[in-house]
Image (cartoon, rainbow, N blue to C red; front, side, top):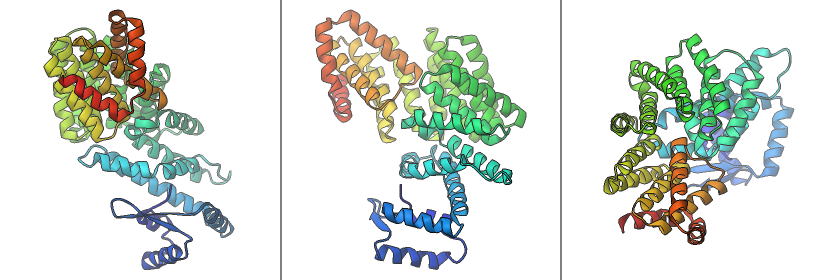
Length: 420
């Protein structure tokens, strides 16, 4: 995974290794090729060890009994970075922070591993501190993890939560994060279990932000299971709590509004769902959350499509695709392509629709990704309708052609089809 200068200063800057002494040592190690310095496209340097040197350095740390304190510092630094990243994931610098965290994924993994490692039986407080730091680290990055690490992080969270049952804010955050990740892959049973525990714990701790999030995600689970009355109750409470929090509650408030829109959309009340989606969009724009904005805009596109307003639907779907491209969100891009496939089918362009559906399926399967539930329903409905309208042999030929498209080609094709 490597490291940058800031992490060296924070993790290794103790004892005599501080300030200029540390920088001088790093420069000498680079000069002797014991540390490799890579110049990044942004003009900054990132450093790494060759594997043999890394193993030798670790042996030295162990022999000087400094390995544990270094690992503790590493865990603390990357937990702090995760919580700073969480704040900046909802800012104009969202993509920059996604990329920054992406560069540190291996360091995040190492920190998580250390947080669950065994400790001496006579040091229970050390073990508890490590566990809570690990839970906070993972929970802070839930909207990053769901982009392409859902399965891995879900399993890690289950293991981490099983190690300790200490009733803390870190546990509550980890629980709602696990619940959300399970929901995104349609594992509603595990999602409900985690979110109900998060809900109970957040009430006990009077953690209003976690309460609003837990209610919102639990409402999403109820909505996807068709329990609309329960979903509405949970989402309305989430919205009420989130609004009390002011700017800090914009994200859970916009989520609650959007899922409430889905509840009414599924009951074919398109007027009310449109109003709720529009309110969500306005709030999300204030929060600079392009991932969620792409989804909410896409839902407005489907309202337009249900009303047979092809031109307006196309505009919404194009904005949704652009937003997901801007934050390099692969699931969102596939969802937007699904929307363009449904648009093509509405226009009678069955071959083009089949190619786009084929491209979506191919990229989802190859990357082990899952569409959000509302997008999954639109995908299933679209494919089912297409199969009823398009001759099977022609459909299969077009589907295979789309499945062979690289993602960028599929994006260009979708835009070309919508404009023709």
